Image (tube, rainbow, N blue to C red):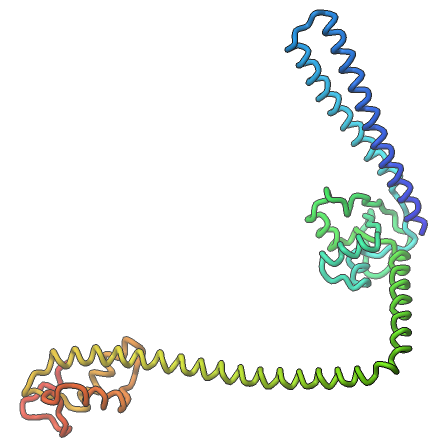
Length: 309
C-alpha cells in the first residue's frame, strides 16, 4: 500500500534523526563542559565555581539538546501529509472490523497496524474519494492521551485508508475460508461426537430450565414467608400493647367483650398498618388474658367499662 511504505520510511528516518541529534548534542555538551572546566582550572577557579560550571553547562546543554531532538521529531511531520484515494471514517472502519468498543478499536488498530489520519474536512457516511489528510504517527504511542484517542474514535475528521481496511477484511475472510474447509474435511469423522454434544447441550438447557423454575418458585415462597413473618411480628407487637392497655384499663369486676377487644386491636394496629383484627389473634388474646377481665358471654356486664379507650 502506497501510504504504508512511505510512512514506514518516514518513521524510521525520524527515529534515526532524533537519535543522531541526541548523540551529537551529548557529544557537544561534553566537549563544551570539558573546555569550560579546563578554562576554570587554568584561571584558578574554586571547587564551587567548577561545580557550578559543570552542572550549569550540563543542564543547559541537555535542555538545548532536547529542544533540537523535539524539533527534529516534528520536522518530519511536514512529510506526513497525504491524499488518500479512498478514506473512511475511523469509527466506521472499526465497525467493519467488528470492534464495538473503544478498547476493542484501539486493540484492532494496534494488531493490524492501521494508520490513523486526520482530514481537513469532516467526512460523511461511506467512502470518500481523494481526501487530503495528515498522518497522526503518535496515535498509538504511550504519550498520546486516552481522552484524545476516544475523541478521535467518535470524530468525523479522523479516518483510515479504505484500501488497507479492505485488505485486512479479505485476509480475514481467506483465513476463515481455509478454516471452514478444514472443518468440512473432518466433519464426517466427528459427526457422531457433534450429535452427542448437541444432545448433551439440549439436556443441559432442560436442566437449566427446571432449575430456574425451581429457583423462581423458591424465591416466591421465600418472599411470601418474609411478608407473613413481618405481618406476624406486627400483630405480636399489637397484642403486647393491647395486653398492657387492657390490663391497665380494666380491673375486676369490669370486663371487656370480644367486640371491645377488636376495637382496641384495630386502634393500636393503625400504627403498624393493620386495619382489621383477625379472629385468630383476638381468640389468642382472650384465652391468654386473666379470665376475670374478659366477658366470655359477649354481652357487657352491668356497669362494665368495655367502652373505655
